[in-house]
Amino acid sequence: MGAARLRAAQRRYFGSGVTRPAAWRRGQLGALLRLLREREEELTRALEQDLGKGSTEAFLSEIAVVRAEAGYALKHLDRWMAPERITVPGGLRPARAWTQARPLGTVLIIGPWNYPLQLVLAPLVGALAAGNTAVLKPSELAASTSRVLARLIPQYLDPEAVAVVEGGVEASTDLLAQPFDHVFYTGGERVGKIVMKAAAEHLTPVTLELGGKSPAVVVGGDLRTAARRIAYGKFMNAAQTCVAPDYVLTTPDAAPVLADALADAVREFYGSDPRASVDYGRIINDHHFDRLVGLLADGTVVSGGRHERAERYLEPTVLRDVDPASALMQEEIFGPLLPVLEVQDLDEAIGFIGARPHPLAAYLFSDRDEDLRAFTEGVQAGGLAHNVCTIQLAVPGLPFGGVGASGTGSYHGRQSFETFSHLQPVFSKPAGVDTLRLAYPPFGPIKRSLLRRLL
Ligand code: NAD
Image (cartoon, rainbow, N blue to C red; front, side, top):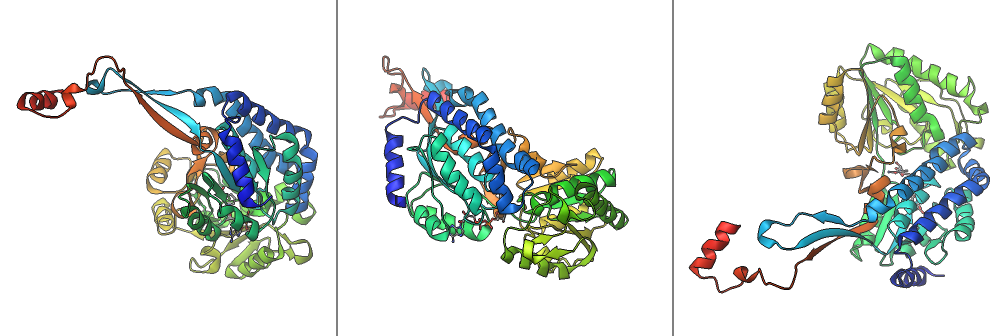
């Protein structure tokens, strides 16, 4: 079915009201959980084919995240759907006011290749919990995952309410030309602009989950623990993670110790030859592999650096002596290269971050409360985390999204429900006694003074 007909058919289905009751929403979320449980093996195999993801990592970073989101939505759905009372000012009483969440309608979800399952299905949880119909467009670069989603989703979810469209730029462009009620896009900044322009044609609201260079600042605490947590957040999925620490800022005395500790952590996780580890992934395609290998020249490799094009393998790599003006420090790295740069102190680190576009995440490693206070005050990023990297996404109650160049809008937990809902205000006044007469013209001196006193 073409994009226009698909959207129109879903809009008609939405208009019939089928998707509105809590029971339908619960049914769909339950079916999604069943799909993840019953078909885990097929899903995991597809992720392995696309990104060389080990099955444990695939479970932790993709399947478990969606399961947690769906479970959280099921648990809180009644409360989210309940009308919320709003206080009415004295002069307008007697009256009642409340907000009531309504589904937006038919939404489009466009996913990227790096977490090709999670980043399509986690937004879908919000869309379904809020009672929408949805068209999903997984990334063509993660072809196996796209194929398995297109095959399995119609077997589990209401096929009139959820459709998967496979394809690349052409398919996306056709879909974006349709008047969806919301577009939820995850991916890079360049395409984010294309999405926003296309959506503007129909005044369609957008959520843009973009990326950027997320810094990790290390100014205190145990360096070995910091190194392990940074290496974990960085090198999972071969560092193709939007919130992975992109680079490290630390003090000159800590830099060599931290660089060594990062190398030790890599050995601890993936052995002395990460190529042989089932837990270490591969680069998505030749284009990104060549781009990353080119960036190796922008610093001194202190550990890692080995690569093998035939299998798109690039070893977890730590670099020093990196020029902040080099390409490595200008573009989002989105691969397993970790530059360690030096700053004199936390203040200089905060200034360094502030002089660049707002990142999607910023990380502080320190055991001093005043550092956390200064970092929270001084750094504007999509989200902050203290003494950990990346795993903040697993807290469904925390909204996830960017600010400025790293994106607009957010989701996860209640925020997902609200992203895909319109909080419709309702104001209701009894019709019996007309208490508004005082506010009707003509306004003589007595009415004027009474009104002034009342308001
Ligand atoms: P990608 O190339 O897979 O593109 C994303 C989607 O956009 C795909 O579905 C693709 O088909 C579509 N697309 C590509 N070109 C298009 C065009 N011209 N018109 C319309 N649609 C088009 O993924 P990517 O952009 O390489 O993803 C990597 C980026 O995503 C990184 O910058 C990363 O930081 C960011 N990211 C952000 C998050 C987040 O949650 N904020 C998560 C993952 C990735």
